[in-house]
Image 1: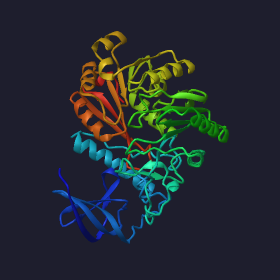
Image 2: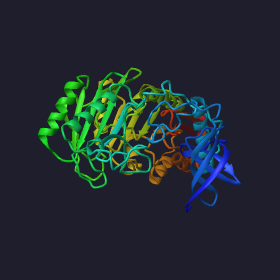
Image 3: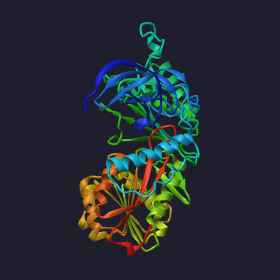
Image 4: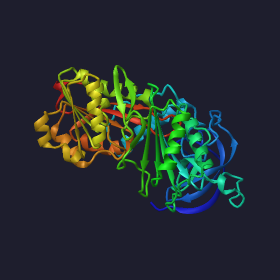
Length: 476
């Protein structure tokens, strides 16, 4: 739907409810008005900037009367940084908004018949809950209100932080982030100060020039700490000096990597991660299991909440110890090993070979002998021949990327007709599409949203499905 840019002031509107994509909504003369950073009950003036056939989009120009529920944002970067948009919204309201979001998307997009959706499982920690963050170096940071680009000296234009929403080439310099526990902030600030004081060129994202381009910090509940620094080209003297300085300043770093990335994007999936000092992975624990997490490995970014998520998945699987379980998109084998004690055999499939190597090593270290892992593109690996070789699944658990599953995968799942399916998703919209296909033969018996990302609109959702003609094979 096309949207026209306009400039219209709507005065004294009352925000009615939380909407999709982290926005809130109200109405004006029969039109829906979407606006970010608003709380139900706020009375505001809204500057409309875009109009479509059925709705307006805009921003709050003035809060006339704040909602009784409105909270003061705790982060100094609120409103500019693209994350944590729901800081003014009390946490119980966030949880209910996520439950409604799941219901809306499964019903509106998928046309699905649902049982009553369970209340969203809250995160015990709503700050410092992430175990992985990526920061971007920029030679031209986002200038704050009041800063004149003509008077800001070149040495103050370097920034290290997050991309500003909707601007691929704008990076907000972050002073303090409430997403990741110490020493994440200290490491980022040290690296920035070192790079500036030693004349290391920050990357120019638009023109693709510069030396130091992005970095990752991974923490774990065991106290392990991984740092990865990415460079645009090799300069051994400068690289080693920086890495040595970081290692000396932060001896608690257990894994220090670097990457020479000459591409025009920052993704590292196809890059060589070179170990400079320490161990090639960090360790994470869940119940009595230990997992090694490499620089490219996927692990749920809220470690403590991941335990709740996987516990729900295991309960929904309804295992008795006799079942063959397929864990699709297994990553480093977390769900596969988490359910292995209650299964006869678990088959895990994952695209990244490095993750599968970690999965095999994790299973061996955990003394698990009934898990097998296979690497490859899911739509090429999972087929009738594979199932004939490794056994028909009684239960399939899948936790795909945001885009959901390929239609060929849905077809194979339907043909395999396991008695139960557990679908874990970080994107209820794509989940709704996939469930609409699977529900040609399955019924949804339980829906459980899980909050992995407090103060954001993102929600993880777990659905339990039962084969319609398999009632005698067991219920969830």
